[in-house]
Length: 507
View (tube, rainbow, N blue to C red):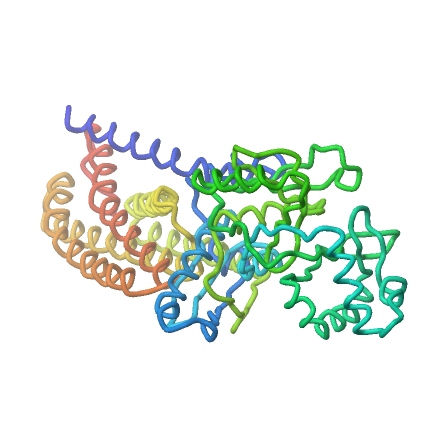
């Protein structure tokens, strides 16, 4: 009797654990997104069952790592380093269960379920070369522009300034419609810039008098600090007093301690000068140094009102620069509507299959068939709970694994019931027939499940992506199937036979 009550307790605990494992998944997919904070979503995702690319939609890319401009030593591990940088960016981007792996020598496979395609491409592709460089003094800038103007327009030095340059606060700027023309002039004047030891770069696009324009900067060639100095980068709304930056977002930078000391000296020795923060050849901001900055803190003004762009910039800066440019060699996208169709089709197929199997089992095995169906439902319940507990991903191949598990579950119960029938025909009592039937069929079911599980283990370790999803689902399903078939159904029989006076078994 004590052993029987122990089985009661084990069954109840198993159900409670299953419900506990499934609760985060239930909450994540049933709670409106606007009612969950970013932190809550992140915590729920860590404990939930995820949907794969083929179910929730997303993107599939194959990236080429361009190592043509690297020396032999740098080429050796460029792809591996690029893979780690991309993995770090995607992890911080908040994609759950991505597939990121190396293919061949210089290619990387990236599969991202449930993401904004355009935003993800921009995040992955940024090279993130960050530099801190001083701007030239105003007098020298005027001289450089005058030299360029003379070279392009001869003695008519006002031509360039009047036709193309516009005043943008403390800086000069150019309307975007004239950028190409001004760039040609700059390229024709490279000898002037080389002789003076300077570089001309542009700022990001911003609106000026109702038109898109970009500030133009003259920078010294000496780089004071690079992106290696960054320890942390965080986005936040701009809180300062500059009118043109109200409503925009910034990225606050914290430097590693050893670079913070260098930064303190740089700022202390150059009070009143402007230090440009250059990202991938674009001057993101060029603040004037008001005082020595001993804390190693800096700020990038993005001029963006969309917080996502500042968040992505912070992610790129935190995760580091790519060792070489990456190009998209192959790209496919799956819309969420296609994924939803797959989910609906999978659920419909599962329901129809369960109904047909249930009718057959109940008609053919009567009360015992009903027990088998309850065991099958429990099998599915524990399987989904286990997948959620392992933080697994459900894909279309995974659904195929579930379907195969259903077949194996029914097969195990058929073996058990047929063996019990043989024992009953031999004249044994229901209790003895059940005990003998389970003993004789145990090895057969164990061997059948074990051989399939071993195959699934090999598939899991040698396969990738969807193959691993199928193998994991199959492994867990067969283990749970063995437990429910051998122990749960027997537990129900024992519960049924514990009542006095029962001499007939409906099977």
